Length: 305
Image (cartoon, rainbow, N blue to C red; front, side, top):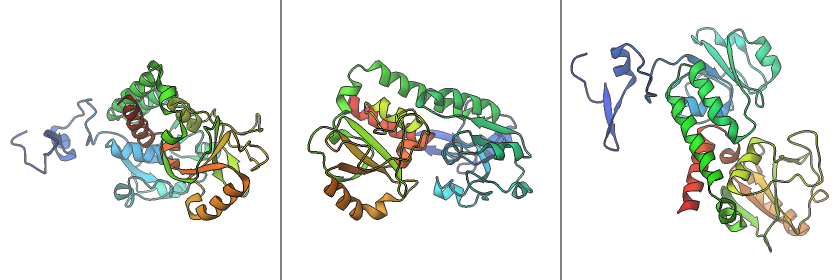
């Protein structure tokens, strides 16, 4: 290949040489080692925000996205938008050179899958335990060996949490609840349950059988939808009717509803009803790719230390 040019063929990071896409293209083949800037993955349209961020940070070629794919900001800003997570304008595929479309059964619709003119890779993420297999699947479907590294990291997180008999005891206290952006009203006693609220008018909660619920469970906390049994994974709930203020803490997610913009009113409501409540980082709990992985790794490391 001849001599290597710094900043063209490689750069240094934390004392390690990192090869650029230019170097890999000069070499002419994929080594299968999961290199960060591997240019040999398929060209992907990702309509799943969690996956879009994960693919881009793993060096996968993303040539189209949904308008809700907002991370990483510097990398997505120049990627064409084909629609949302519930609809897509397939005519915009023209000229992108896309080879495959990435969808998820919880994020996207059956109609999108049925109408898509390109081959689709479809995941179904319902729990943290789905992540290693999903990443192995995408590694093969997208020809992106770098995703295998993330699969291994997920396996380590899941296995490490299960192997630690003290995990639930260490972080169960409300003062150690991870991902809290701000306490609106502080619990007067230790909550037995946490209700995760994602929408207002109507109020909507999240069941423990969701990916969000599995993150809480892995960290040693229990989600509850109060008196709501069965039905939707994201049921409409009544506040305060469905919850006991003496045993339940209400957690208001930063997304999809912008609760942070209404925090002063929420404080008044919670104080009047006698509930403890907090604003929490919704992306950390619900973005099931690299973002939630990093969140869990940091929290579990903090617990061990």
